[in-house]
Length: 351
Image (cartoon, rainbow, N blue to C red; front, top):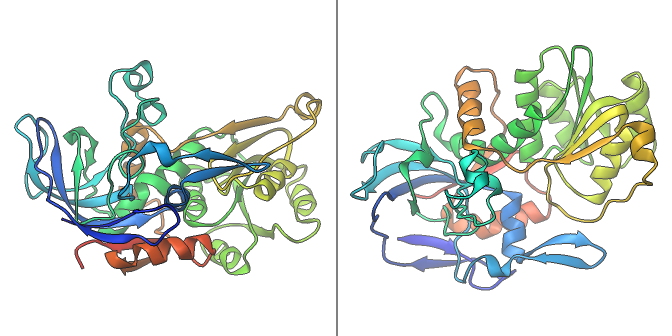
């Protein structure tokens, strides 16, 4: 089995050759065809998330090195453990990676992604920057018939994150929804927003002009350059008092500040991005504006199934995808850090 793995935080990934795992009990061995590269992989490679003010959330204790990243995984079932059901060799499946312990109250109510003892692939256990991956149960393997194979993996993170956040949005006819940040997740958000809210004005904001032009071509009615002075005020004026909902797909200090300044009274700000930093707002502003600020973390297995049904129905346009060989995984992380990626990079793990 070949993988591109972290051997030291921030250092280049290294190719490793190890024994291909043999599935036990209900496990399933997947031959990985493609795996998306996500900005969360950058943070995990760094070993921390930025909490602002010089503080860091240390992630180095989440796994032992060497460790294989990659949670946007698609491939073919190669072998099944003796207790595995609902899977057979030859099945082509996309993996729901946000796996919990299976026994706590959060898991039992269907929110495995929030489990405090997570087994998330590519985050807590070895993931898909490899030509094989072990999945703990067949229930996490989802059919993706009708969906292009290279895109199926990213739907399990960027697509699911966008879909779940949009499901939390309180929007009605004629409202304005602001998509803040047009990386891979934000572009997915724009497409899912179009599919879910046909009677809502969808606007987009980013620091990059090329991304803004892409957003216009993919359905945004207006775009705003966040670094431009007065951009948030212009959005307020254009929307007749502010957006009803702004979803921050970056999660940086500047993007969240833009998002909260873009919504009107009674507005919602939903944060999905993990770039990092700190946020401050005078407490009286929350009741005066009746402002809601909420977080949204990936999505449940039930949401994943709903999302795939929406994609299969042809209601979601594909985002730009660049395919690269597995041995370019480390280069792809560097390109994400530098903001050089439009859409998503997907690794061809069998090339």
